[in-house]
Image (cartoon, rainbow, N blue to C red; front, side):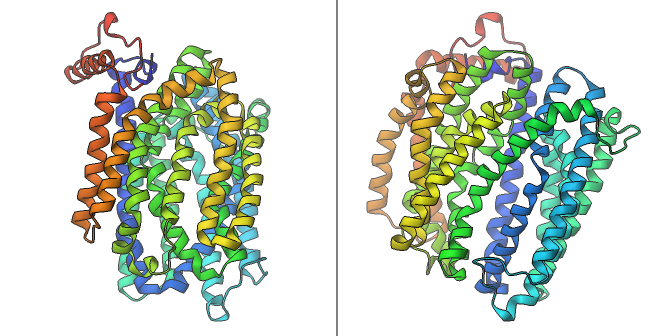
Length: 532
């Protein structure tokens, strides 16, 4: 039993999931392309110091978003549960309560941003006097953006809770392209980071207006006679989960930017841009599987609402294996050839970035990808407090490791410390915990999720090391050829070694039935994961 079986293998259900995942990947592709082409141009136009300031302002805005107290994550979970049970009345009360809570949260977030922009000194962050004016204006605009985007996220969450990622991504793609075009035009006209922040505010406002129009047509019953307010029955259900989910978000998502805080405190501010861009390169490891795993959360919440533990376990095993198999070859390519890509992409950054930084970042993110599905399932099964404690332990370890290693290894020490803390928590805590929750042994979990993936990876690692020794790609074409060779080699190795003969036959049967648009016969249902 596996991922496709969890989706029931029904054409309508399967095609819906395929549409969601495909649209997620298209959205990520557009976002990645915009970032890839626009970032070097921004660095060239505004300069490295201004770009570092741009990162600082967005990091501050990122942490101010945690004023939402977890209601965004809670809304998605309960929207999925209510939608699965056909409780439109509760869904309407959920939206009303969430919007009210997020309006209050956005007000506090915006006010805090205004205070920080007004001249309050941020510990450990030294803004050059000549850049103070730009810092103030950018942070004020980003604070105003929070006032719009935080309560506006309640509308976006409806798409995710009802598993309509395709519609959410369609509007996201259009707005991303519009934003990139406006920012490129502004930079060509000689404008700086202040105008870029103003464009972001305008796009956020437009996104809310689009969501209102679309959702009125898609789910008119949810927005009919809408009025903000707190429904007591929803508050009792959602409040506790939201609180722990907020703590987990602060710990999990907050740690994704914690390294930037360490840089601002322990290292010169100018080193922030090299680290941020190296992390963006390494971040492709998680980015490549996020469009798929993003669909797991509402799916798991729906299965939990129906009490279907068997399919939750199937989702855990098949989802973990699938995510790891997709991310592993990319992590390998980035670890060995990421520096070559950075040199071609933004030469100014490559000149000051330390070696092996991308390799450590890619390894750390690959390990996080491996445990991503289990974290999603723990949250979906109402164990947000448990996940929060796990993350708190990882943060504590990371703090000690980073503080010790940064003094000796600089930027590389930050990535090394994060990786060491991640390894300890995964091996010692998270794997035993999720296995106990799902009532499977750690040996079964590891064998079915990474056993055959690792077997398929061994020859590819040897092949990739040979490529590294023989080639030094210095053009986009040669770099792309090397990366494609590694990905193709792993795909072939995984087909031969990663799945069994019966699994391949079952997969082909399901694929043929899907392409024909017919319901697979009962004896074609997968008894084992086709991805296991």
